[in-house]
Picture 1 (cartoon, rainbow, N blue to C red):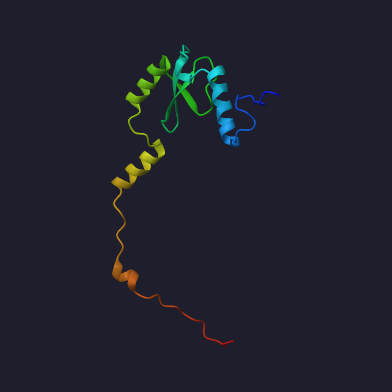
Picture 2 (tube, one colour):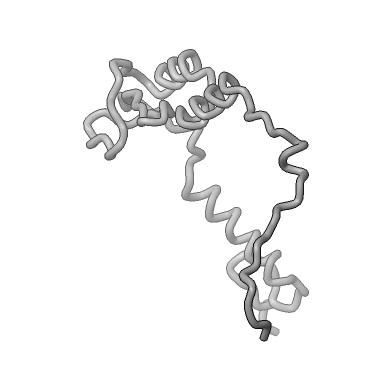
Length: 132
């Protein structure tokens, strides 16, 4: 008698197992064997804080070309140092254009509408002539 046939995840072919169960078992085995969690890798790169025309902040790896529309600030350091700086200086997450529009709306009083005038029906004039 032959031993029961097994697949790559070590269950017998005769066992009822859905495709997703099979996939999940293989995928988790692959991840455990080949991948390291991102938190376990120490990032020793130096970053620079950048800002765009809307005063939105980000970090960019030092030595890479700064994308168009962004400018480099004087803050350089590790990821955590740069993010701490951004947290300190970027207190209002709204883009600059939105902040300016909202401030302008606050300082400009709304236009007054004369309800008596606007409630009158409009007179329409017809040209006198033949009706069709």
